[in-house]
Image (tube, rainbow, N blue to C red):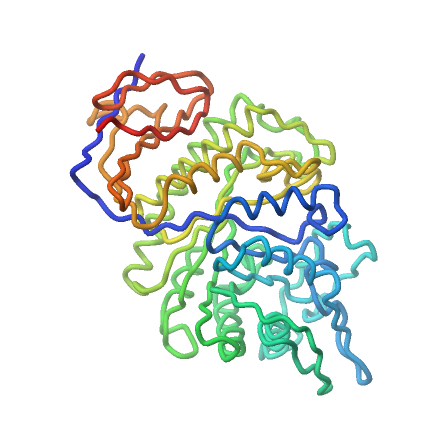
Length: 456
């Protein structure tokens, strides 16, 4: 059965304000000397995305933490030797476009429950962020750490705990600095996080008065709404002002029964229904959270800076991921982007640039063995080529007005130069015919994402 599409080109529901982007973390396959290094950073450069997010993440502390041991009475232990190449390569690939920095990892020794770090920098340390109680309850130690990291990359260096100057030669500019990543995952309370956010922002702001700050960076579970209420409320902040931006994450996935092997998790034949149902649920969560933001912090921007999917065996050292999965994942991320544009979200980040065996491989945008783009990357690049902030969003219906067809998502846009574009997404694993207005029928391949240019 053909799905008819109706578009009201003369009516504008909103102007898109959504920046589409991705994020890059300190993944071992992206280290210099890796066989995929040049292909991967070439692909990152070719995306041409604004506000790409750089995330030194806790899973590999030797690659992401600049001070792995506390200072002693005689010396300090600052070392940017493994982190600098990532920063230099990412900034080169962005070619002067605005970047979001998220040096997210607090050194484990700053907590009362320190963690041993393996010598091999490529070793995954899943429990590095297990600490919950800071050894310095004033949070000055954490704020000073991030100040020195920021100074290293923004101000050419820093003065350490013993008054010694460390020269870096770096003078980067970051459009935003995000404070921590998924603090709810380690059990940090909304009140503690908000206080820590303020402490870090106060220390970093003098480095670049034009740099803005992003907070929350919540996991896709969002189990405690108090994070949003507390963080967004100006009265809960040190200076009585609302934050510049808040961020949330979303990943669709089957229930995780065994993260190391496919069985006994849900079979792949179930994933399509699971992923799109979870995506719809997340859109309603965002709608509610954003209504809170509009009431108590209307000037705060909303960033959904990690969206994606993954199979349940996310830690499988020998994953087998089908082409159909990659196509499904591309359709889900494209569908979510379109729905979030409708809501007026400020930024959508497709996560993440690279995953690999045992390290959530299903989120990757590139092949971890070759560095070449996969279907998820291609879908992201396709949307970046066709759409951007300033596009007019127009009323669009796939199916009947009283009964939209759930198999297809359609959304019409008019670009600032007047070009009309119709985005259509096949949400099923079978071919399907659609009939846009004033043109013949078009067949979409399974999970295809396509932009149609209506006749004049």
